[in-house]
Image (cartoon, rainbow, N blue to C red; front, side):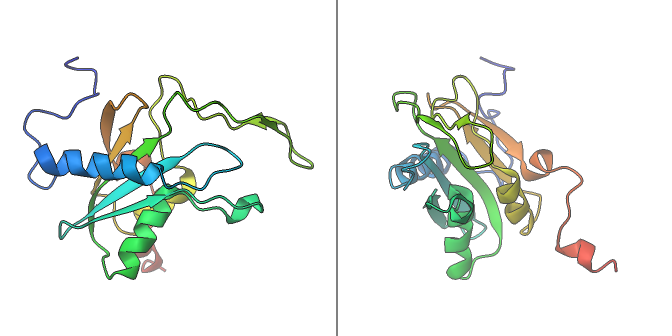
Length: 175
């Protein structure tokens, strides 16, 4: 599978988690997914965040009947880390539900187009939503995001790849 981008390079950069540390980050992301509260979408997502100091904070998505008040797994992990005094991050792993979870039924919201929020993304890697990318960006662009598939394979992207030409705290100083 060399060259398909689904496995890390044999020698990872020194600041990139590798070996047992990477496996722990991925496992904590999978474990967090099991705690997701997602009765509406039935799309559990877990995330695990590695701080610059080596600590791992996990998070899961938490939905709400008022859809806009739900929070994604990535932001949950970041908020947990921030609440414990961490603001420098090295990596995040994001895990989605496995293909054996049945898709959610067709949902129709008032004044909207019907959608199916099924949990089987097929052969696609999970990616953070735009809001999560912007929250991640608050803490820099130079960290790795491990995007997984239900079968456990993953690719690594730098945050700056997921949110190019981004707006961050330093842009406020330009005014």
